Each structure stands twice: as structure tokens, then as C-alpha cells.
Length: 321
Ligand SMILES: Cc1cc2nc3c(=O)[nH]c(=O)nc-3n(C[C@H](O)[C@H](O)[C@H](O)COP(=O)(O)OP(=O)(O)OC[C@H]3O[C@@H](n4cnc5c(N)ncnc54)[C@H](O)[C@@H]3O)c2cc1C
Image 1 (tube, rainbow, N blue to C red):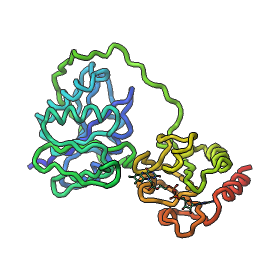
Image 2 (tube, rainbow, N blue to C red):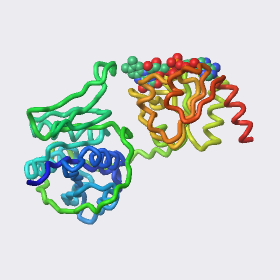
Image 3 (cartoon, helix red, strand yellow):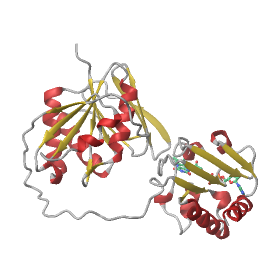
Image 4 (tube, rainbow, N blue to C red):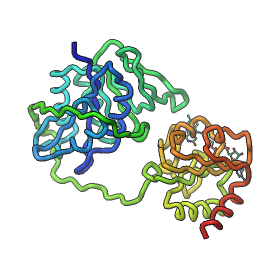
């Protein structure tokens, strides 16, 4: 008997695959074990080869529907095409990135399929063939595990950067699966102008200088800015600092901010509340500077310094100079 299918819907961003897709393939592989087939669904133009950006992450199969209208199709048209594939293959579960596009297509598909969708998940696991999706709820005050036991497919959107994409061995089978493109003429895209944003966000940075309430003075923020420049990185903050005019929610790390996995994060004056830690604890190298030797941030740190944030920064900058 063939294995149940766990789908990852590949998302296109301009002429590439959105990085959340690769993150979801890695997670799907780890969930699947020998029990599920991980199938990536790709809707692309006849001359596109976006599958080349997916195969290195080890899905069992990349199933492609081709139509030259897909790259500029509306979310309603894409949802219609995916619905046709669902009807044909009856997957067990479907994962989308909780991106602007994923958040738009997934509920349209859910409505067509009359099944359940858990949005904005921070973790996933399977209990036998039941997808258990973890997400913050009630104003982010509790983490809920949500299941959809009575309907298939089970669906979830997952927050970008929740999982780390890791190349995996194994050659994916690439198959074509034709669908009929049904134009939805209520809405027509007449032109697409991509937003050009050259600034890196804290989610993109490979090195992060993170500031908390214990490193919030103007002088310390100035030193941190210099340090971030020297490191070729960017400043991120814990929640209390988003009250300062220099920072916004976009700079926030944590459960209700960004999930990040930089190669280096240096935390200054951050206690290490669980809501902060979930956003950064998978960083490759974690350094913590805190005046309190019992601060929980030291539990996840590879290197720690007990002392004053400003003094440490000044000494470190002197090393660079
Ligand atoms: C639903 C919910 C969601 C949340 N989401 C997030 C989130 O996404 N991100 C987030 O960050 N928080 C979040 N929080 C808040 C979180 O619980 C903490 O309150 C917050 O992370 C604390 O920030 P902090 O570590 O900067 O401040 P504090 O906890 O006040 O810690 C300050 C630290 O600075 C140290 N310190 C003081 N002076 C110095 C000095 N001179 N030098 C060095 N160290 C010094 C202290 O020892 C202390 O450990 C959330 C809370 C809730 C309830």
C-alpha cells in the first residue's frame, strides 16, 4: 500500500522559491520518517525550473503543474489549481509558509476542501497520522496544540524561519501533473511591481547584537550600533525595547516577533524569558552578557560574561579598533 502523502506547497517569490518552502521540506522530512511520502507541490511556467532549488532538500517527490499563467496568477487561481491536485491525490496533510501568499491561499483552499487549517504554527508533530500543530493563542498567552481529527487533508501554515532548511541526500522524483487553469476574472493583475527592499532584517542577518532592558541606555545603543557594524550584523531587541522610538516590532526577537537562526548572536542585558528564547535558541553560537549570574539566558549560552553590558561592549569595541 502506498504511504500517505505529506505535502509542502512551494511558494514562488519573483524568480525564486521563497526560503520558507525549503525550511518546510526539511521539517516535513523529519516528521515523515518511513511513514509518509514528502511531496512538494510546485506550480510554475512551462519554461521554469524552480524544482532545481528544491531537490537538494530531499523531498521524495516534486510534483509539478505547469502553465505560463501561474507566475502571475492570483491567489484564488492558485488555490483552485491546488484543489484539483488534492482531489486527485488525497494527501494526508498540507503545509504552507505563513507568508503573505501562504496566508492568502491556505484559507481559500481550506474553504474549498471543507477541512481544518491551523494558522501561524511554531511547531508540528504527528501522533500516528494526526497532525498536531502548535501555535500561540489567546493573545500569545498560551501555546495550543490543535488537531483536525475528522477531516482530511489536515492543513497548517508555519511561521517563516521557525525551522532551519538543511540540504538532504536522496534524489527526488520529479513528476508532471496537469491541472486546468481556471481564470478568476473578478480580479485581474495588470502589472506587478516588486517592493525593492535592500535593507536586511533581523531575520536575514547572520550576526545579531541583541539588546534587552539591561542594555537600553542611549550610550549603550550607540555602542551596540557600532558593534553591529564591526560584526557586519544587525541589532535585534527583546520586547521591552520596542517601546523605544529607535526600534519597532520588526526588530523584536521572540515568540511574538522574529524567529532567527544567525551564526552568532550576542545578547546584552536580556534575562532570557521563555518568550524570547523560543525566537533565538537555535542560533549557532550564543553569547550572553548579563549582570545577574542566575539569568536564564546563560542556560542557552555557549559563552557567558557576568557583568555590565556597556563595559563589555566598550572593551570589545576597543579590540576591534
Ligand atoms: C504572550 C507574550 C509574548 C511575549 N513575546 C515576547 C517576544 O516575542 N520577545 C520578547 O523579548 N519578549 C516577549 N515577551 C516578554 C517576555 O516575557 C519578557 O518580559 C521579555 O523578554 C523581557 O525582556 P528583557 O530580557 O529585555 O528584560 P528583563 O527581563 O527585565 O531583563 C533585563 C536583564 O538585564 C540584566 N541587566 C540589568 N542591568 C544590566 C547591565 N548593566 N548589564 C548587563 N545586564 C544587565 C538583568 O540582570 C536582567 O536579566 C512576551 C510576553 C508574553 C506574555
